[in-house]
Amino acid sequence: MTGMTIRAVQFRSVLFLLGLSGISQLCGQYKDFRTWYEIEVNTGLKNGIDLSAELEQRLQDNSLRYDRTLLTLSADYRVNKYLDVGAGARGLLTTDGEENLQARYRLHGDASGRYSLEAFDLSLRMRLQYGFDDLGNFTRVSDNSLVNRNRIRLRYRVFGTRVGTFVSVESFHFASGRPARRTYKARYSLGGSYTLTFRSEFGLRYILEDEFNVPNPLQAHILVFSYSYNL
Image (tube, rainbow, N blue to C red; front, top):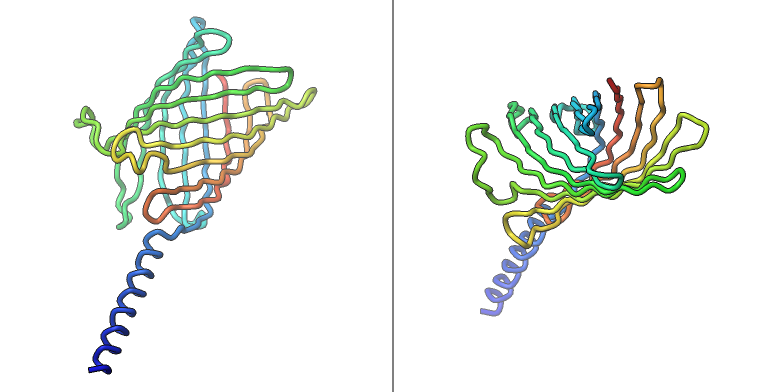
């Protein structure tokens, strides 16, 4: 009887340890190095409206595998010296677990405040973003389809040069779905820009993207190359 009791305790202990290993694997964070490439075209209208179109290509798995392609169209209106409002739409192609391409769509609305002091520019952008998978069915707000993004950014213009630098922090929050998963991601960015001509600019930045409160959270180190042109 004693031997059977000992074996039963050992069996339960093994099951318990296996369960713990499964939980740690489910909740464990994985890391990746990624690269993004961006091309943006901007134009300003006389009534204070700015239009932009951005094409973006992202690579994942140590920058060796296709992740997604994004096209974003947006418009911003300058209300006054300190406030902008805007809206935009984004279409993207991404891959599923079997490497099949899937189309997805997003709509967003922005409110951006800014303040300048000598060579420094401080801005705060609040964005409400809605994502959906089907153009014919985007009226119902489902769990976690509505996201609130808040970004604070500080820019510094190096006087007398073509160089600019910035740092920013952006947080992502579920605005729909379960309250336990309200905040799920943060991006910390450090970058710079170089003015090539009066109309064009090259940018380079590093992003640390950190996920939490989700299964298998990601910690990504991202290098972003960007080019912008003003019409």
